Amino acid sequence: MAVREILKMGDPRLLQVAQPVTAFDTPALHALVQDLQDTMLVANGAGLAAPQVGVDLQVVIFGSGRPNPRYPEADPVPYTILCNPVLTPLSPQEDIDWEGCLSVPGLRGKVPRFVHLRYQGFDLKGQAIDRTVSGFHARVVQHECDHLVGKLYPMRMRDFQDFGFTEVLFPHLGRT
Ligand code: NI
Image (cartoon, rainbow, N blue to C red; front, side, top):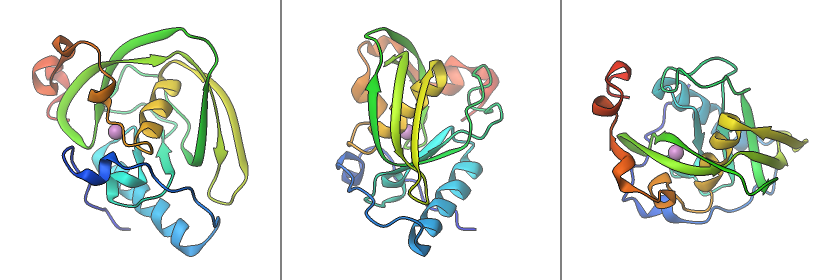
């Protein structure tokens, strides 16, 4: 188990476009995913992307299959390891809702995301993943995959009136 330090907004490594995974099922990739999992678990994250721990690879993990204490109202998302993702919005319909990010600690903002999404990619072993999802699941995938193209959620916001400290906006969540 290795909990890694999560880079915070302002670190230029969070603004890079990540490199694709070229070798699957390797000890190095297994170790990276284990570290991402351990780090996400300790932080109660809904997801985590490799660039957030300073690794320049197109790898994200998200979901747990259980409700997340940082997003208690949201439907559970299955635990997923996704490499080299390709996202395809299935309609122009957007939804605006609150997001947080472990690289932007203590804050929440309202972010527009596509409601209906197809995502494709590969798991840790290089097996293809191809899913059609909507709602919170689609939002989490868009948020995590944005980390692979150097985008943090404040860069997707349209109205900074909907931006603030979690402890003020959602006192029942505490300082998450
Ligand atoms: Ni994030």
